[in-house]
Image (cartoon, rainbow, N blue to C red; front, side, top):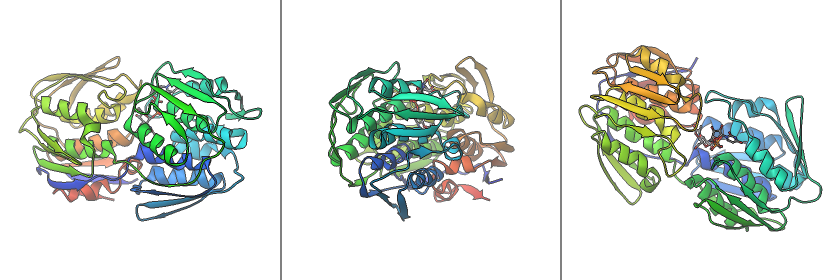
Length: 416
Ligand code: EPU
């Protein structure tokens, strides 16, 4: 089992540069399927999920090559419209191939992802939107088989909730559909705006990116392009929190602080000194954080994927905080691991009541998912003694060389 071992007690200081955003690049790799030819993405992080998405694209017949932070994807004229269960199970973001495969091939066979460590995570908003565009679906032996007669047709689709994945699937399908598609109550995440920027460079006609109403005028064909992926706000936010929890002084460069407004505001509420400018931010942590309450919400609210790292910080605050999780029904699974380190946290439905303790104590824990894994490492940076975070491969899904980059800020951390 892969492990990250951290010896707590060092104040982190220095500068770390963020890489491209996982949740943008995965979708931008998929959008390449919409146009035959050679695409090139730059600022691509070397993370496990990118490798998995390369396998998904290769399964459809693409050739993929990563050199440094550049990823070349050669998309053939004829695609194999299939994403098999062994790949989808490892990374449920694979479901976003549904829209592009239907648009390009008229059919798609994608294994139903099922739930994961964060909860049930259904996909009915993806499929019902595509049905409104003319697709028909049947579930056969765990595989979702979608077909269209002719071409997808633009229409108005109102999402019950601003789902990131459903917005992206519909956007990708609509780019090659006949006529106009309007996505109402669309997700407004910066990664979606970046996907729209890439699609626009490819020749798509899209307006309203970054707002709740996105309008797509379908075109007959798209062309391959070169595109630079936006910085990963979650990676940047995690290093900022690493500085904060150790009472350290960390500067994050290559990032867009405006994508972390709510998270930085909450850090200020805990007593951190936060400064930022064009492409950088600096966080100086207090001796001991002050408690604060927060609730996760879709962008521009507090990001659910920053919640476990924030709970790690609040677990050593000088009082009680209430953290409300509004996106996932099983996000609090890591709390039991933090409790092994001495954290005092009670879960009531979707609320965590975090009673700050004056110290944590290192011990072996298990990372249940990407962000909770990062949060346990952060808790280890503050804890007395050594914390061994097992199942560290979860962290590799979203962070390139997490241990190495923390070590560059002075952390005593080793990966094995
Ligand atoms: N949902 C439904 N039905 C649907 C679609 C979504 O009930 O048809 C629910 C989900 O179960 C969840 C909520 O809606 O409770 C939000 O899900 P959303 O579709 O917005 O999330 P996603 O597209 O599956 C992406 C990120 C997640 C991030 C969420 C929210 C990627 C690859 N994943 O997931 O990132 O937490 O948006 O911002 O982009 C991570 O990076 O660690 C991660 C989990």
